[in-house]
Length: 447
Length: 153
Image 1 (cartoon, rainbow over the protein chains, first blue to last red):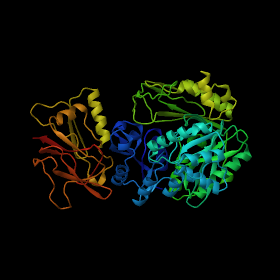
Image 2 (cartoon, each protein chain N blue to C red):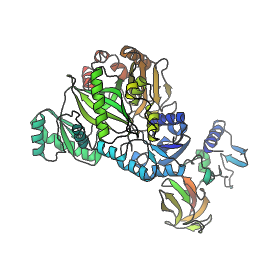
Image 3 (cartoon, each protein chain N blue to C red):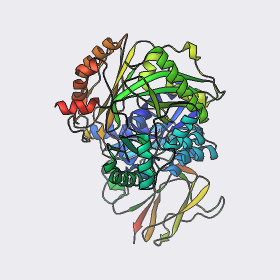
Image 4 (cartoon, one colour):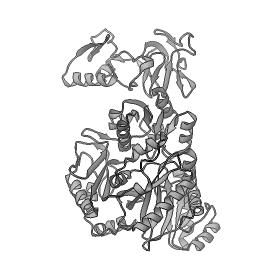
């Protein structure tokens, strides 16, 4: 096992990684920007190194400073968390070249899955269903028109080089194609430096169901079931749950195997997530693979009893998987609410000083957060303040627990999305398990 | 005595309005004064950690705002623009680039910071005299860490 690890991240995930390191006896090095000098991850780590001024481009994305910080502290490995450099294949490669273990997949897998159009082709070649779409990015209007006719309207235009909702446009009919292409390409170029876009069939009301996989260095791979992340706003997930109310055992088996096929075809190792869209008929389609630990990993941890971050370190250290596929048990039901420092109605960021922070407690409650009383939420980074996770013996108990926990939780000094989550957790469609990616649109329209 | 303990001492001093504190532990003595006596240069707040056994990298501003302001009144700091290892000379055994008291110009190389096997020459941004050298040869330094104080000319 590694004796010292540098965490190339901040906020709640840096705290999460430090906690896993503590339990494994690994010494920790935090890196921080000048805006994060008093951040919890800096306080908890054994050592810390300032790597720049507040803007991410000058700090958390500064590869040379992060590598240098690992060198001067003698860190043997770097855990990239999620976001920032976590899916940057060049960063993974620099680590490998400098003799630093990158806690994650090989750079080549990150590269392969980072090209969304190429990832689709790989999935199709592995026999995994993909949404009808273009095999290669389209660059000309005529090509796009032909492709869209074949795929069938409505189509969605997506950026090849990125995600997170940028460079995406839905086109209902042929008349809208030309201008949607132009704006999507411009957005993609601005966000990812690559104007390449591809076209895909657009499903009107699908669920977003993703599978957690683990593959060790000895070629053993398992899936740990799914997470239903259908409740999204502008492609940002807000509430996640495991298991999905829509899955049967046989569908879970089929999708789990499909997820592993894709991961293996990419030469994957360590923890990863394969995302699918599931339509009302129970047909599933590969969307993309995320080659990192994800924000919502705790819901899988709650239903499987496994510590995924510790598993990442163990796999990176060459240990075999903790369980076989047959030993994986999904028990009970888990929900997660992402509590953001945002206006709960308009979702605008609300930086400022946290003047009161009372975490809920009691049975089946888990809070992953870097916030504390006196913490100043900086304006430079994402607004995730806390993840509120519950577990119950079934979905009803998990819902009751989440409702209770949201009511108990107090955060003052900044606005938070707690009131929004309270609304979701009381909505009849949510209670009935009738969630899809259009759930939030409907909720907003009702108000 | 490490940086976390020092910061705790400083908070204690501020919280209790203590002006001066001296602590001795294991052969190391630290004296912290919050307000300077006019005419005297305030003492350093800490001894730098020995390079071989750095357990905590120094943070950018270890002093409380008042002590920092007093210490550097009129002096311009040279802050590290990168993360790496600070060296005073171009090579082991060579003469240091600068010593305390030396006159320097804008653009004079004052030290090297080694990062990822590359030696980066760090230049002064102002003309003046080296008033204090705040980092030790071979010490790991972080972004923003103060390396020199320059009395501008």
